[in-house]
Image (cartoon, rainbow, N blue to C red; front, side, top):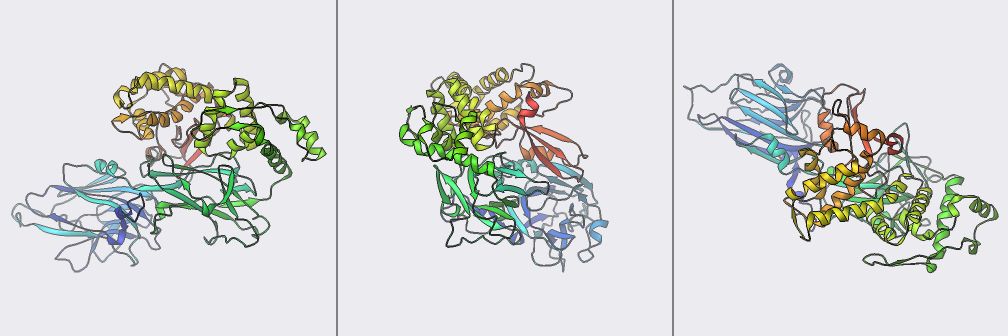
Length: 610
């Protein structure tokens, strides 16, 4: 382990340090598979050798696994085994000899699993556990020539020359013939830190791909730690954010006479982002930030936010991530007015009482807005005319606390509110949060809270029967029955693939606890609710065509679309969106664009469910 970090960084090494020896050329030899995860950095020269081969009779090494001039991966014959092996010196021979090649460009700056299966008479290339090609070859081994002689061939990588590519490698292993590349693919995937797609709250995506953020307004982002096959990783680590200039990658230095440019919200208190790392919870850190005083002090430069794990001391690009470029714009009059309205509730804290954390009681009193004389006459007129300032039993400061809270804090608040408020009060609270946050999707999550909690409690009681741990096989039937009833669809059952994803969301293996179940339920219930509505219900029921594939991860959807024609798409429910996230239960379309690149677009539930 590296220091006190919960992430074992010793499993990751530079690609240039890779070196394994394989014994071949004896009568017992049949086949071997070299499998590994690789994270390639961009190379300046193509073709580039990823792995080379050499043995005792060779004066120079020959390529074994390369990226060609089109950045496609090619597996080449082995010099000790095959007559068709490439000329070590002549790089043009790399494409002239028989080879196995991917049809699409090999992804750079992303973890990809590679499997190279080599036999006397053939070789096969696997990408992410899937066979992409096979090539029949002529063997150099004959029954009368050195059949009992065992020789070694070294497979290695080098860095720094014009025909090599740099990167990182994880879990490299030579497998015996009885183990497959797909086995190694799921055995020990590497970790990957990424910024999830932002919710609609506070961030707008411009046509040029730049995020527009209003200066001084809090926005929400989720930073997720998963493994390379999309499973959430439960590690006790923190993530810290820093603000960079997008064009140079240098830090935006704080000026002595101003507050920090990048602030985070923690329990309603604004702190400098670098002073307050965010904890990962179930593989996700909900990050609430605002950019302060930038629009007039940066000469209209673009920014980005970098997230990294401070416990990881080495420079691992896959354990840090940056946002899209950010354009900081001045807040308009409406947004100023909105923030002033939120602050009205801050002065009334003494009139209400809340026991949070592990507390169970909450006390509400009506708010008398006429006692607040801090607003101007025009603001008072606007207040009287606006439905946002009717007399509600839930105080403004609770609305403010919810808007600034992370997902865990919001869930705890909603449990208290639904226990102590009527349906009408909850509905009014939902409308207020939607107004102040600028995101109507919050209201939908709040209004489903009472039913989600009640249905989940009932489901767990039926499943557990007062046992703390329940075998997964005893859970699936109850989960399916509840899902089909909530989704209002008895014609489509959940598949083995669906249950496999649910178990990964739970974070459990053979047995499930109540905590595991609640984690899964907060994802499943919003999905079932979405499926029960309008157009999505019809698409879910449809068997031919099958509009919605089922429960699949982003990575699984991308693999399914490899080598597909433009316009091919998959509809899926994003696994990173769980209640009370404003986009929980939403639908994402993953599709192949005209540029042959796979894209992801979040669809607004309001527009497709009714």
